[in-house]
Structures are given as C-alpha cells and as structure tokens.
Length: 249
Image (cartoon, rainbow, N blue to C red):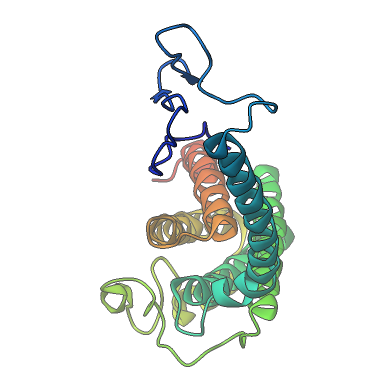
C-alpha cells in the first residue's frame, strides 16, 4: 500500500498536528521539536489510534473485495473476451485456413512431382508448416465455440476486404485453371510454375497476416500472424533464389 495520507478530521486539543506526507522521501515530516507525528501506542491519542483502526479495517475490506472481484473476473473474462462469430479473429482464422489449404495442396504436389530436389524440399516444408497452422486456427474456432465456416463473406473481417477478392478468390490464390495446369505440368515447367504460383500465394498471405496484426488485440492471433509473415518472407527469398537457379523470372 502507499504511504498514509493526512487526516481531515479535527485535531483534539493538546494533540500534535499530523504532518504532511513527504512525497519525495516517502516519509512523514516531523514537528518543529523533532518528534514523530505518528503517535506511539502508549500516548492514547484519538487521532493516532483511530487512524490505525480505520486503516486496518479498510485494508481488510479491500483484501476481501479484491479476492471476490478476482474470482469473478477469473470466471467471467474468458467468456467475455472470446471472439464472436463476426470478429476479426474468427474471420482471419477461417479465411487463412482456406488460403493455407490451397498452399498445402500445391506444395504436396511439388513434393511429389518436382524435378529439382530443392523445390521438393520447399514443397514439403510449406505443406508441413501451413498444415500445422491450419490445425492451430481450427483449434481456436473450437475453443471459441464457432463453426469452421461462418456466415460472413470472404475477407469481410478486413476493412475494404471485399476489394481484394478476385473471381471469388482471396489475395494470391491460384485459379482452378492454374491448378489444373500445374497438375498437368512436368519437369522444369512444373517447378517454375509451382514457384511462381507460391510466390503470389505468399504475397497474398502476408498481406492478410499483416492486416490482422494491426486489427486484432488477441495476443495468440497476433503471434501466429507474425510467425506467418516472418516465415513466408523467408520462403519468398528462397523461391526467388530457386527461380534464378532455374533461369526463370
């Protein structure tokens, strides 16, 4: 507790004035004769003993009230703080799960079909990482007692997010025709097409993750989004190096 403050009650005749709190030194000023203003236990001062009884009583009440409020907050806050169906967090978890699912699909294909061993390794890394992140986001939705899909349009959680949708696809996602072409490609053509599609896919995913970091105050959501941004930026550098290696731009 902080230092006691000066009482506003009248000082009985014969009692010494109560000194003011010295904020800088966190101690009581002394009287002119050097005596301590806080009455000793044996002097019978009404101000001293009344002040002590008042302080002790209110400390006890404060402890009890604090305990009750602490229990109440502990019981209520998880429910009050849980993101709702139309929240930024729920929208991000749903949309990014779908976004990631396409990356996992293409990357598993790369791990199976790519000619360059580094492209195969990249495909495996992306598939494993993003599948794990999908698991995390789906676990959030279960904890929040929300459905995996929801009723909001894609990207509705982001301001002007509707403007980022192209042909029903979120930023960076491959079209059905592009995915069909990727499945049909072989050799170097497959490797180059996969890298180009994944480069665009990562740029779109980074945009979404950076937006939720700005919009959400949920620490878990912000942390995962931050790892997505950092990880995908690193993978973009690897993709560009592989494109250079394959003589493609």
